Each structure stands twice: as C-alpha cells, then as structure tokens.
Image (cartoon, rainbow, N blue to C red; front, side, top):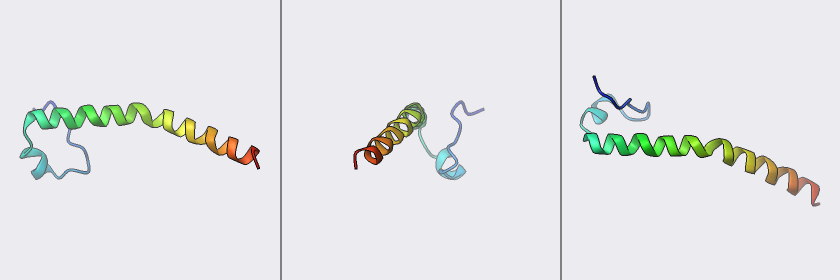
Length: 55
C-alpha cells in the first residue's frame, strides 16, 4: 500500500512514476497550502470589508 495519497490532479500513471521523496514533498506542500487557505480567506474578507468602508 502506498503511504502517500495521490492528489486528484495527478494521474495514477504519473503518481506511480514519482519517486517517494517527491511524493512526500508534494504531500507536505499540499498540507501547508491547506493550512493557510482559511487564513487567506479571512484576510481577504477583512480587506474587502475595509475597502468598502473606506470609500
């Protein structure tokens, strides 16, 4: 069993040909992006709110 789940954007054939170290890096980077997505959405909402109030 492969310990790294294949991202849906990557074909099964490409994922199978990807070295384990690269798979681990891809998974780590995806986790970092997922960690920051809620913060980015909150900051964008604040920016939108501020720009609407400043006119």
